[in-house]
Length: 474
Image (cartoon, rainbow, N blue to C red; front, top):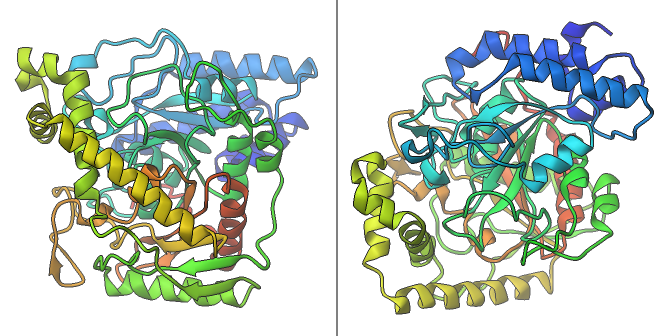
């Protein structure tokens, strides 16, 4: 196998080639470093990248393989979002306040990928404090979508999504507190998986504004690659109070499960009347119909949400979190903050304890509503986003299906599943009328990671990978 072929391979194939010595990790490193040099300047997906360090770490992986170490992800290039710690690397959270911060240690997810033989190749761009649905900040600038450089990849993990979509890495780590892995994956034609709360331990790193919501997630070119990454990262860590003490997860995630016979609720608007562009709605209908033909029982059904179910009623949790963590810095240096983040902090500082408690109580009611649905169904499917990627200049589309929407109108289908702690995955299911990717969101009950990925694999078989490997961005 030639070195040039390495960037066309997914994570599982790269690891197999390196373990069998058809490729060396050093070969993989050279190929991906060259691709990053060729494509990243136009995309601005990767914002920290050190070819010399990559070469040294690749040589160490080759030494470990030759020594007989068991490395399930040998030589697999991965990136980390700019809010996840990588020891010795500058990590800014997209904020001027942290432009000189050097992480003192690896996040647990990072250390587990490295233990499995994966090769760190760079840090990807994100919005400030990962609290916006686009990927731009005043430290590194704006990230572009590989499918159309005038469109956003979404956010806040847009750099991660763009890196996978453009073939700059095989696996990208992101964080998802309201859809920040799933929506960018949908907008760039890759798989984006948010495990349930506590599946990937995260005791080392920055304090997240919505700490009970945010999880480490993964983007990859395929469901198989996603499973391989998850198998390496899942597992208990006593330092994380949310970490699940399950010892079966790595093996369960490593092996493909079967989707045949699953009972799946199809909720095109999540029972909340959210507008969806007609081309996206048509792709949802087609995906549901295709699954029916593959042995899956699809039934139109909506969760019976509480009457006040809406992301806006939950936003006080994010506002309060930002104010608690960054309020003192904001008082000292307000000009250092993105204006949109500054507004959120100001709102958080003005909140009452009652308003925050109301949001916490709503989260409990949402969880019970979803649990009631999963008493009758194994999984739920819905759009990941109601639109394809929009213009770089805007926080969100102005209209959806002809209706004027708020800047968060594009994001309404994902946050409820963070507030209810469940696994959810975006998998490509075709292209919109503008030729840009559309994602189907698959949601499972707590502990339902393997079923979610099984159905995602079935969708992937139906549609094929949407991953584009451009010679130049387009």
